[in-house]
Length: 178
Image (cartoon, rainbow, N blue to C red; front, top):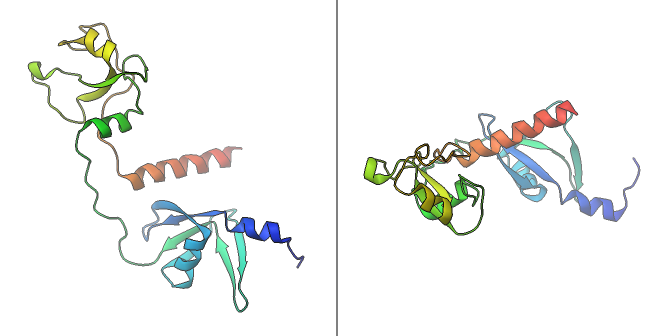
């Protein structure tokens, strides 16, 4: 085997590995050092999908093939996750710090799609980010009464592992189609 230059060897440690749960749900992306610890301690095993990359990591007494994907071998790592409370910070994060009526990112407030005075609740399905101008224009009316349309339908945030899994599988589909 051909010797690799030192710079190429150090770049191996900058790679990341996708970690799957025992039930094959993609959980996270970890650095290769963390993946090595999980593999060496028996907390994870190699997974091989179609064209999986393998990185060879050497110590004076040990050579380890680190794959691009690993699967945890212990327990149930899916921690209990609660939907976060409906508050300004969480709603802004969900809506990408963007007004859901006009797309502005300036002077943002929260708006109840169905106003509280008309029975609207302070829930994930009824609260959106709105700029001061749109919130004032809509006032105490329903969006259609004010001639306004929401860019996206409000909904509760999803579990971070599910969001990561969706991103992961969408990225996999894109690379397969190239």
